Length: 118
Length: 113
Image 1 (cartoon, chains in turn green, brown):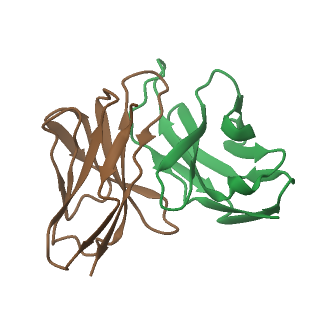
Image 2: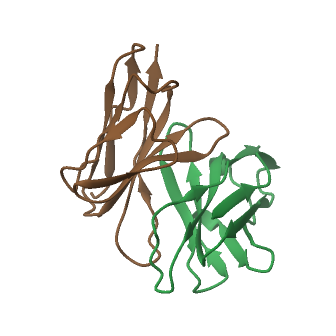
Image 3: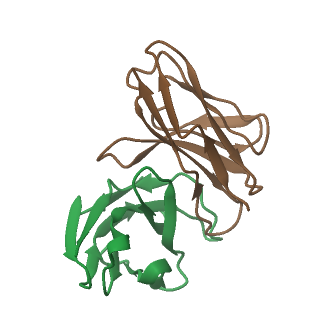
């Protein structure tokens, strides 16, 4: 079984300040972890993914996330928020086997809405 | 350009009518998925298909049906048995490769009046 908990449903920051979106997971198998972003009435876009190669993962638009197995966390960060970062963010987990093959069934967190103030 | 298309973007239907949502991909992906999104609930899996002519129920399949006659296409029918069909529906696909992510379409917003 697997689950994802996004610890904040809403996060509000000022432009130029750091962003932290928190995610904890549980998985019976070695997980692949993803962060997706969704702008209003749009599909989901991949920000970054953890695939066991490196614990610190860099993604698009200056985002990065650190996989911490001992804490079962995969928090998303960005040093300086931009107005265009305002969106909803989803943390996602899927189990993978030793060869990295995903079973394809994703488990989504509830989402965190990020608001960026000028 | 390769990608996933969903049509229409907005769909309105009367209660009691069946409606079919289109999903087409030209990424040559084997697996395709349908999700339903409601505010504050993340995405929930309706149906998925790992290969042509085969599909499995997801977590909330009741009131929905699918077909997978072609690799490129995975239409979803919302039947009159679905008690609360108004939602945002997202289609996704996945390639058979290690650590691959799912690619998502732009979504269809269905409103049942």
